Length: 131
Figure 1 (cartoon, one colour):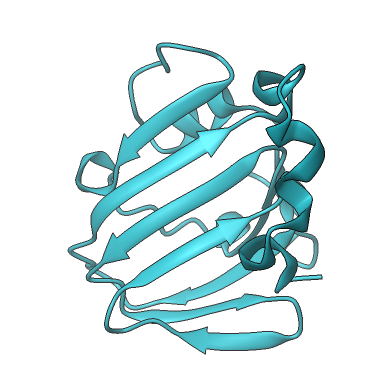
Figure 2: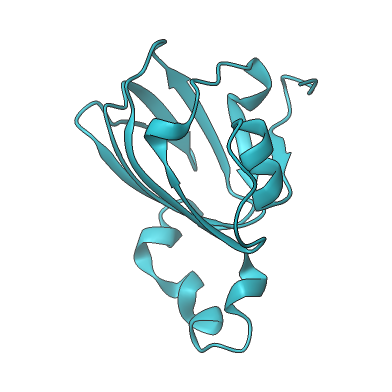
């Protein structure tokens, strides 16, 4: 994958995420639940800094490294639950040969249209921490 290392890679769709992580195509184009054990360790430098065009909620175990979102680095060696709004930039420093487990829910904003949640989700504190 080619990407200017100084710019975050922008992940446009859930299908693109599945393709890059070498996962089967998602069963639905706007929502997916990913088992971290199914992801092959992806060490491409272009993905060290990324933004997603969808909401991400993840519960991970076995993550050894640091994540940066907003202006701060966070140490998640004991496990982590993360929440990202669309288009937030997330940077990682990962120890190689991870044995990552857990689940990752990705939801495109269009999936939430016409539901009250689409109007209030940005107000939830766990998404706000990164502004």
